[in-house]
Length: 239
Image (cartoon, rainbow, N blue to C red; front, side):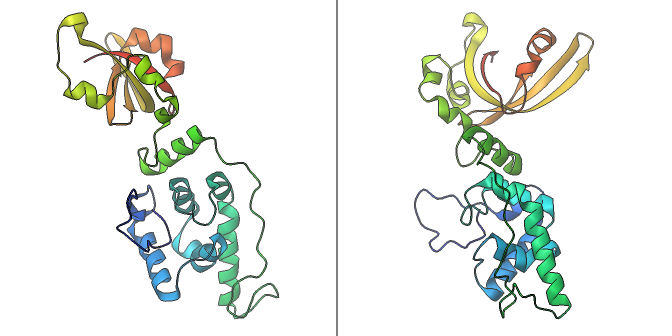
């Protein structure tokens, strides 16, 4: 998922992901990106991208979600900086387009309308790995480049935790009520009321799948602070 076209679609260990599948981006905006690239060549930088598209094709939310998903990593691998600078980049593109619409050329533009002087981006450090993945999942709906649980390495196995795939493919038994340990990351929480009290559905994921866990009232009331989006949990579940 990159604004630069792939020079070789058959390279190993690469993932192709449609830009239009990123949340809130849509086919219309991506058609504008592709048409501009075909007509006038590859984008050369973030500012070149903003200058050639600006507010005409992309709004701030679309630009931010593209950045969260890693679309602009070829220009700037610091996704946090691109996200925080989205307003600057869009305003810059809008300003350049405005000058062109008036038939004017700034002293800071070359003969082709490209600015020779660009504004500074917001100075900010890149997100920590866990947050970077969480922002990526927010834009895509799932973890793609890696999974937050990868950081725990062999610890998950040492704790006796099974993956969703292992639980799904393994035998079911009545021993211990078919209790299993699972390591997961919380993606969403939806709370509901019943006659027995308040309970929750957790959408969680591990490296093999995204699935749902039900948390009943006693556990929910005692552990609600742990059930936040992005939190890594060790669960003991009944399958």
